[in-house]
Length: 299
Image (cartoon, rainbow, N blue to C red):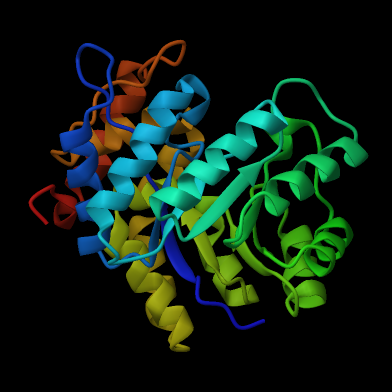
């Protein structure tokens, strides 16, 4: 399936000021950091962006700010899923009107739904807008795993369901999406440490929170794989993997923010109830950042 959306997409972190409010100025700088690093798109209000801890008004604010700062340079993917179908539809219509390129829709994440309920929700949201939809398969949070068969069926039935972000961390499932259903849907992998495997397998791209920290490095690996230079991709991956592993092995949102701070790009603390990292993990991430001086915020 040919698709306009591909490559490395940054799941943007959400900067918070000392008073707990969204720090728009820093968010704009964070958008530029990713675009300057060469990413192929940015994601507003994804899981890394702490959308579940925001009000509806704040989610709209973030989406509008990101779209304004991007100014057409790369596609903007807005995550508009919500606990209720009504709110998801409202957020989706707002994001479309604001200028989002694609809507990413996670299933409701509090009350575990049946598969039929999940599919009705996804179809309703997709039918409410005219722009492409990216399904967000996040079974750890939603309690429902969208199987490759289900995804393929949805993509054939609903014209604007064109992408899936699979965050199951199951490469066997991802392989089925890529090889069995690649004619109807493009697969993005939402597990950062699987980048090398996913692109080698034929995924359309990756959506990575770590791209906030090391955008150019992930882009370079993606480009090497796309160009068939596996040796260069493996060498570059080996260089950044210790930092990738440290971030992925820690509570993810606080780890991304700690890594940005260590790189000289403070974005504030996570919004409670999330807390910052413990001192030992913070020190480990900071020491690994020091081994990669190119990650400095001056880029």
